[in-house]
Image 1 (cartoon, one colour):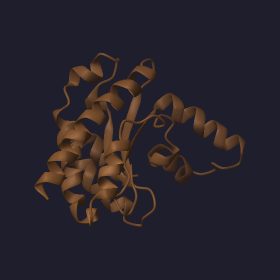
Image 2: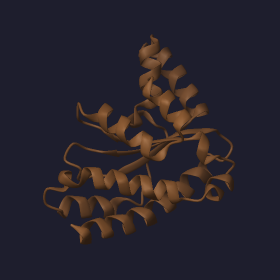
Image 3: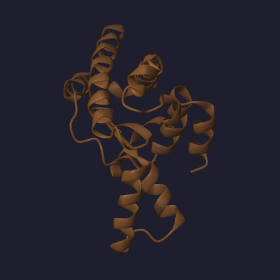
Length: 174
């Protein structure tokens, strides 16, 4: 177990910093409000996606034009549904997904995986965000399951571990 978790932490730290800087550079003139780490109910994949206020606004406008956004609940879904986030296509997490897939009973480690993700996010210097015009304290970080009814429970558990309390409490009211 320790070997797996140590390897996961090393690979996650490397992949997160590479993905983060790549995405922040792409959205340098926009306001990032969320960064989600998505997985599936088997915990054998991992991806990171972030969204900006500007991309959210464009997406909601597009969905309204298509008749796919006609309520406040729809807008909340587009704000917090990480599968709707506009920045998440390129990833340095492929090797992490291979590690997760190759580990038997990996879902038993889910609490530790979330703890490691939160640890890495929390240890990432504010300067990394600031050099791209962002403030880490303005971003809601959370883990989500893309195919499971437990997604909200995991999101609520994880947001507390890696997001400033004022943003975490706003997120919980979604």
